[in-house]
Image 1: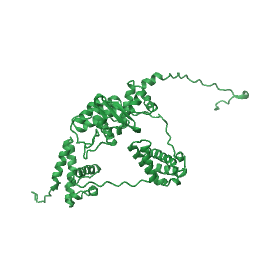
Image 2 (image 1 turned 180 degrees about the vertical axis):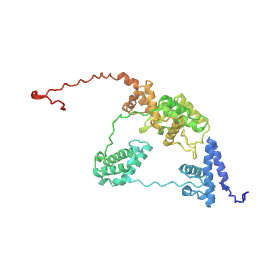
Image 3 (image 1 turned 60 degrees about the vertical axis):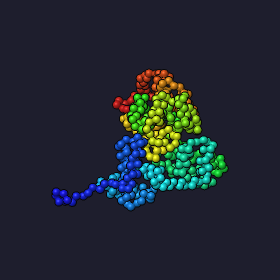
Image 4 (image 1 turned 45 degrees about the horizontal axis):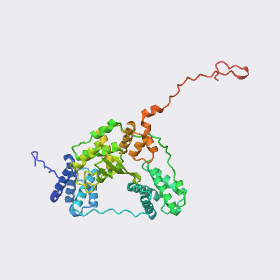
Length: 432
């Protein structure tokens, strides 16, 4: 009771109970990875909430798995005096904590989700893309994902395919597609699949011609790029005192100086760097392997990232994630690095916010610096200079030198009015 004789409600706090040592160990791991105190506090708060919830729900720690995390995500929070919103980012942090416990052997390993069995013809097609065409695994996975969207609409029996079935299925898919780019990618994957079936004698020949072709004009658009001063602002926005800042700066410099793709960054390994001759080995599209010169500032940024405090690496990839389970970065993580740098630098008029923006910016800067299209094509690893010619449209100085002067426009003289035939005169006030 208080001085007004009203009952005092005790504030409910979160307690990890007997699991507090696990929480302390997780905090030391995050601190050793170089996370800021604010980030550590956020991650520990999510983990504490989860441990308090399983204690209040009577769930043993050994029972924790994906189903328990799903129940936590759906629970109506009454664990604290101030109920907390449990959003997707919150659940992601809890999932990282549970994965950390599984990696330490505290929990049994999480079951691997079973992938549905592929159709025999689809599996043969995907295997042929790897063996015969040498496509990257990420491209093969994307083609399989695109084909899986259209097969329910056209069926899986190739002997029943007709031009009408193919076109009707694609049109039905286009009506429900979530973006304008998806129908084009699905059509491309289906065209490759039909050609493979025809080559195997499983479908009628030339069915690939029944796949509608999206109307596009080659080199019709302008490359999207940043001015050099805006690119430098991205580098300055990275904090060199934190592991995340050092990693992001190294990634941005490789993107901006060498025009690497996001997948090139994600798959870069320590053995690909030759420090003696300052070169970088990159294996891009079509398994084409090239060696590129490593600029001084990009090399310094790599050394700062590799020699400074960072998460313990379990593989030889250069760039790692900063949160448990500390795996290699993905192409999506590289794109997120660019997006966050654009936001930190305060660039509001960026034409796009993905990693390819810096690839376009690098090509444009090289062209304006006097590099030839052949040299730029070598750095960007284009198979043909016709692809590199896309960037020539932004070289205003070169275009001004070859553009011809437009003749001055002379005023058009009005034609004299013709007199009516047969010598007749127009009535006064009448319109012609």
